[in-house]
Figure 1 (spheres, rainbow, N blue to C red):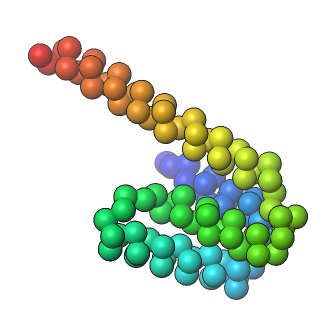
Figure 2: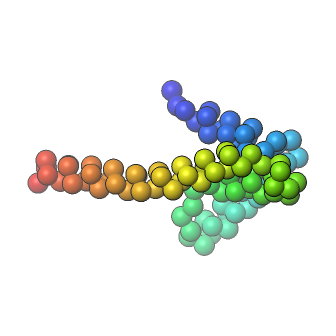
Length: 101
């Protein structure tokens, strides 16, 4: 059981209204970005790239086409989860190092 459906619902329905043509443009932009980043050796998150592409499609219709509350929640979650992930990794590392050293 995964919770990926919540992420898909946020990206696909909550940031902005996606029609098939808008979705295609977002996916194409994300795919090209991922290919370029991969070729240049840049470590990127495909989810972050897709969120950016969906934001771009929404912005093409004007700021009013975006649900700015959802966008703000995404940005806040990115700012929170990066240091939490780093902190937990440090905690687990030192805990396991203490156990097995």
